[in-house]
Image 1: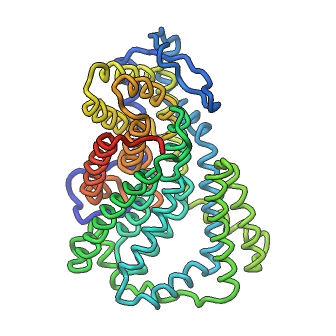
Image 2 (image 1 turned 120 degrees about the vertical axis):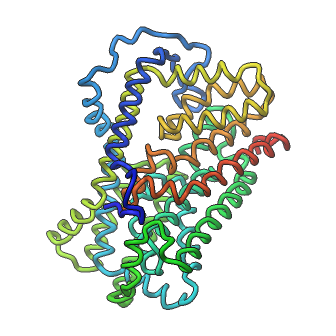
Image 3 (image 1 turned 45 degrees about the vertical axis):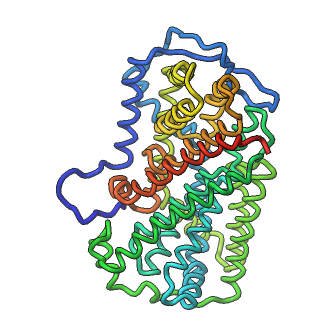
Length: 466
């Protein structure tokens, strides 16, 4: 449940479900303003289905969104989001087996014992772990770890926002960098014909810039609330929690817990390798977590029936987040029915014609950032937008690598800012959207400004394919 901020009067942010339903309604309104249009699709040399940029045409929409279509989109969104939702349930249920065993608590206890007086160094460690998750393109696959981040924040003597931020900001930094992100950088580069993960050196420099900005924002907030707990954005909860000893009751480490943690670490390594090298997606991720669940039951000698009960208890924790995933997919369902996504992209391409290269890059960056409000999927946007940007880049003498970088930054930064996906992440952490915006807006402004400066540097140095 989201916690109240210290301001209890005035406007209160609606529940995540209400916000997503309103976004769906916004798409319905747009469908009666923006004319329907479409591009023809074809398969490129890399085997990816993309649009043919020369085939846009307006169409008569024979299936305009009706009153019932709006509500049917909720069900259809759940169907489309089933793979993500199923993976969330499986991963969260299995991870809870490890939590119930006391392994995570014992691990946190060991860290706290060895870092007394250096709590922020632990924040840095876990922030870096979530950055790595983002670099590997985990995205939704990292969601089940968000509640654990909140628990770590509490154990270190900070508020709920610190744990939320080290998970969400860390993931955003890694995902935005595009270092080894198959779902955005990888797809975009294949569409425009660049070698996979080429240009990694410049993106590594970008990762360092974003890493420092995110960590500086996190440090400033941690320092502020330690000096004056009343300045916490969740001060009521924080003031009460400060009276409790969060290290009390933590279990001792033993051989079974060490084995459980090692099995968990092994799954994370296998997951990263599978996603990067073997092209794994949610079905394979779900499968290895089922295997992990069986191993944990054997390691901790949990009976089959008890293991199933614990699994269900853990899966229930992500129900709200899974429901939000379905509603976010419902937005895409309505946009597809209205045939307005291609029209929006075509309008952007018309706007870019006869512009200077720098102005065109700024427009592209802003467009992808705003388009991310409606279409969360990075790979989904890539197959729509990149075939348009490729010929425009040739006309404007902009290297394709610079276009991919611009797309990557425009997509990645606002994934945890716009409500479409951030609401899912926040529901995992128990933080409402309004409180999150009050915390993160300065950090994300820093991300956006530095990202476009990096794009300008990339254009200036002729950032190429290698």
